[in-house]
Length: 104
Image (tube, one colour):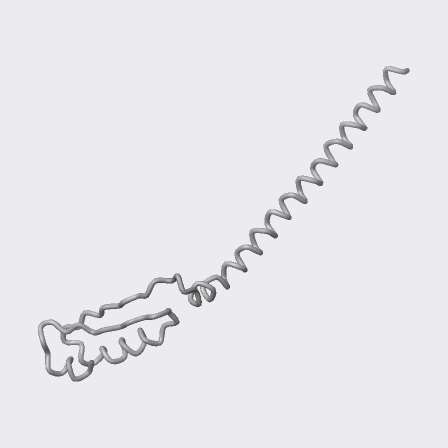
């Protein structure tokens, strides 16, 4: 009789232990997911912080243009419209083309 009660209480304790730690493990997984999501959302704001930083190095963009008289001005406009700090965009025409040089 005492052996049966001890065995029953052992199983109750084991069930309590497993359910308690399973619930805590579930909370740990949910917290991990929430922290990762929070860090990911905060990382989306990081480019604005990086763009305002004085430590961000300047960027130079060279655009090779060969017979690109039709599209070079639109390409240079779109490059200068980028939200990058201290950006220089320059079109390099080689070999010289009269129409492309006029467009740049």
